[in-house]
Length: 449
Image 1: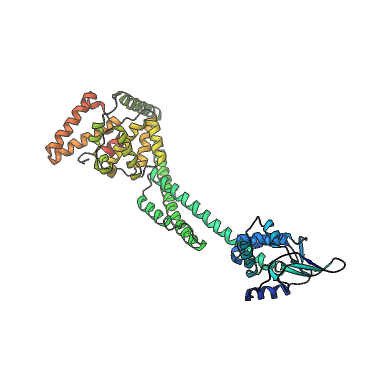
Image 2 (image 1 turned 60 degrees about the vertical axis):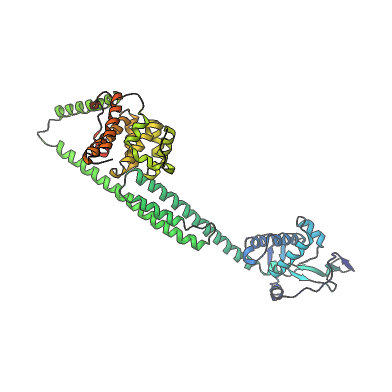
């Protein structure tokens, strides 16, 4: 009794060494072997690239396995399935016939299945009188049993490589994030270091990361980044240790001074508190006595002419909007972090913060940490002890002094006009008192703008 199942046309198919190797492996399968066909199929999917199989080919293999009625495959059982092309196409989601034939050949080349051709090239099963299958022609899936351990080892190797690749990408992400945060902290806290060089080194390393790269390349880049991370970390830790030592020494010095027997604690501490309180009130009153009018843009630009360097095309700054845009350019060039800038804008107002940035930019060669200095001024602004008026007036006075020193009449006359215009708004120069820190940073005598 013969049951014709498929209608594959008869034809001669070439025999390859890969096909012969697969047949040899299939014949060597142990008779007591037993595998779960879907577990093995998952291993094949994971090792697909290593095996050289395609996604379409695996879709066909999935369909072929579904034609075998048992989930467990035994080494001593008949493992031939004989579906027709039409049946395979339906279970492979409507794949075109030409695509089906091409990817069936891929499965054979990869050694995942073996063709068992009938004399006329058709797929069918010959059954006996009792209904049992005596001979079947179609696709032998015995390599699924014979190579199950091989597929498992390949899949584990692929999974391990994927895990290693994921871990090195995580190392890169964490390291990049930490370095950026530490550079930001170092700039904000005024840690003495060449942060510009550090940023350049960081950008040079990060610039080596390609869009797609093997794990080994990413490992090498990660090691470079971790080396830079260690350098930046060491610089910050050394600074923190130095600060702690200085604080301890200062505390010990005060303790020794207070322990002198002739020290009159009550009277001197009382007068000290009084002086300190009086100074705070004077500072606050001084700031409150400053004009409530906003500084004219022309006076600000005369005091901070370096802002004109930041205008594209060499044009001037015609309004406050353009001035704010120039301040946005100046901020990152000085190493002022976005958080410090946002805090200053909140405490001072956008325009006052931009004037502060302009003044710091004008004297940036005399300021060690622009970000730290801006935070200090922001803290004073929060308690009403800071105004941009003294800062701008100090710059104008320094400009006038420099013009007198160099003997440039035109510059001196312009500076005198600026001060005269400012005097119309500020009644007396003596009322524009400046803190010691601001005077040291922005009003050093004998230095030009």
